[in-house]
Length: 117
Image (cartoon, rainbow, N blue to C red; front, side):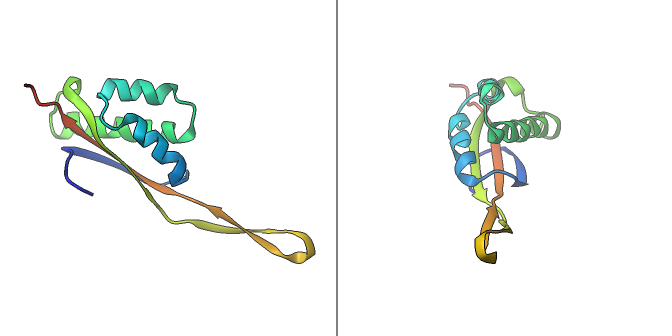
């Protein structure tokens, strides 16, 4: 993880696949905090709801711990990496077994203040 954001929040072991979560991460990366919240609130996917939780946590970290102004924050970093895979099995014909892979992901959101020019 590169330190390009000032404040981070993580959600480890989120029950969604990396492929589905990365599409949501691409939506909010680089947006203002307010725009990212609106985008996630109206996006109809489970990963968007999980990212919204992490974004709110990152905002709380920035405001309470680092005393940053929420009006000047933007999403500097949004990462998704694979977590542990839970392996289950399903019995099929002739007593054979098909694997069921329940994938998880680690979600990371980083916020930074905009530089005034």
